[in-house]
Image 1 (tube, rainbow, N blue to C red):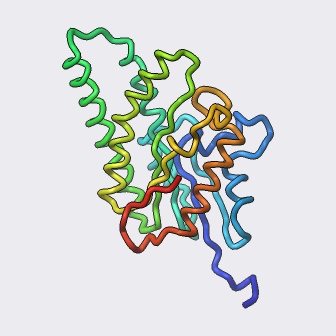
Image 2 (cartoon, rainbow, N blue to C red):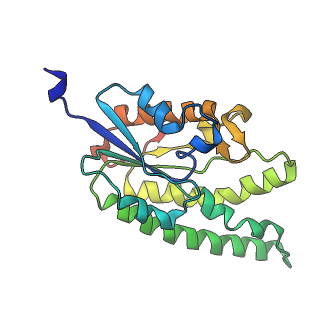
Length: 217
């Protein structure tokens, strides 16, 4: 078959600076470029993710969805979590108060994430979501608090992925070394390469017609 007659697969990256990390790698390859390099020439990668975005902004990104899009990968939620950063320093009368507040935050995030994912899936394209990876704060106490709080957000993401029957990229496991980060919350070139290779493996190997959630790392 002539190469010009082959169907082009077109991956769309939605979300935040996990994908839109060019500003942080100082002229080195960003995630979009790294993913394009990993895949064969039958694949195209388009970045619609925007640094600083939250779940609310995915609807805006979807308005730019190309007509020839074949796969959607979403990494969102980290900035939603950062928006609740002040919670870590709030006073409380008891552990029950803390857990109740975390429960409220989690319920609010899950509603927003569910609406976002429903909108994305309505486009009828193979879709994948990512967990929120753990930050790399130099302060050990802050790091422990952040990791603990993020379990609430990640539980929502995992639950929504399973309910929708779509695959999941677990960035917590993929980006598990200090060198994967260029600062406490942004992926480095090394981290970006790991993310890119995991995405490439997923879109090539996963049977999206199975409607079953499989975790890729």
